[in-house]
Image (cartoon, rainbow, N blue to C red; front, side, top):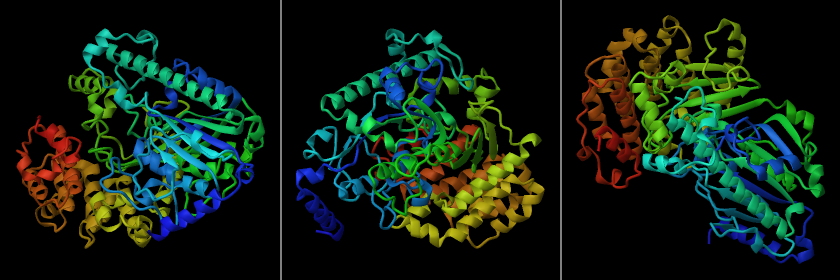
Length: 620
């Protein structure tokens, strides 16, 4: 038996030996009711035209509604890894969805339910985990579809998570035949279609169907609350309801817009535990709360100190004042690889303003992604774009983005009008740019190393790896930020990066070249040399990407060569992302790929990322 497991057994033995009257601690039960894949935009509680959800609305009348609750990431595994650790995912190496390998928790840190168990709580999860961490022993008493708080010892406080998957993205993977034959409860003609979506019968039906799914979730939540009441535990239990990240209509889940991050959250305190609430029942709070804060908040409600390795801070319980909570107006978010589709986007929201930094802006949002495009709405949106039938707002999803964006969410809640070049907003742009820059460098953000390099060098101890490379990462961020200057002022810095002995400085110098596009043509000669002979194949890939995006020749042979030299699936998938991007932007190119180029084990399973890319590229 290893030392960690032995220590946990000893702690549990101590608690199991306590008599029942001691187990009946003066601590609340805590329940999380978690709906999958739904932002606040689809609930009547938050938005006119949203789904009526009477069970949630009743919780709201008896509890606190958080107007500004945010997932730090717009997709399940990264959001849930943030929650379970209380740590920002790019700091601890769990920012990629789906994971290629499990990361290790920061040294000395446990997943937060383990601290509850050690304090005598019965911890249960029914049933989704989806963590990108290796799960240590002793997190849950039960974690399965049968997990229930009912199995605890008499008088033992419990922490229970109940997940509701009926609103999950997969529920909208219906066929045209089903759409034609299955009517919705919500009238499709009454729903509002977002201004960046095409207003078509398919989009109206999908919106209506999605609202119906919300109502089904609400019914299930209502039944669970009735069970809690029947068990005599309702008035001894603090109940949280929240969505696990943004909604799944296109440009929601997986994307760092508000539709992917801004979630519903309601917390009900029974009378017995009202002293732990920052406000009276029926209050709507304006202060910002984030998923990174959820674990520390539960620990605080249970009277347990927050571990120092956590980034989050409690927003409920002892020591939290309403005035201080309402002053919180900052949220940080991140989006990286989403299945086989690579990106690197970071954002800071402060009050009404949202600053978004696209570190690879040429890697457009709508780039093909297998699971997303199983939804008819995604397919139709792309088809209408290809046919030239979309307006400017509807076309943005399929076009290169700007390196930075600024949105006034009071005036532009759907993030369509980028104010970054508007002189009237220059001051707030610079302030938020600096705030984000400090955030990324202080962690530091591990995504500035390519994923394959991180998996090889940093996976066993991501935090120590990041701290050892903190100065180097800051330098890489500075190189990336050259794209925010005019090319005439950035050229010297880019040239220095391309001439560096550090492969990742060359890597980021080339990404900046691709961001500038044809403006960076004075650097073609250097890029061609790097593409042909650089010792690092991922640097060669970025050089070929720059050449391809700017209409140059010679890139096809480079990319085929680096694909043959890829050491693992992660490298191959990153290279194939560039191939897919170039194939989308330059249909004249022919890469002449075949499955024989790759080891069979990389494409053996339908959901393997390399397999998904090849199916698309080979039109299988």
